[in-house]
Image (cartoon, rainbow, N blue to C red; front, side, top):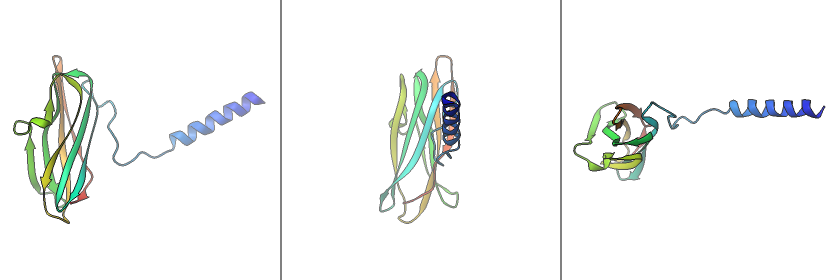
Length: 139
């Protein structure tokens, strides 16, 4: 009897845990052989200013890790700003497995923006990149 009750309790716990819906803005798990996870978000700062905050974790130490391209779009889909890694030193780090950084865009207060981030990881065996779109936020 105790064993049957224990089995039923375990099954009920598993059902409840597995039925929990995922959050809309989740971290992408084990994305590739090079990229373990990546995430980005827009953080409104007020008066039209937004921060694009991004994080990438590799599966091991990478010779280059970060974002190669970040594009900021208005809600209509028009690209209003492009950040390239060759122009912003805080977009790529070297010889690391984890990287977090942010960039600031000065837009128009009350305007909605989202960002498209191209994440990148490279080591001596090769490289990979993944694209991520943030949720739309109002500046």
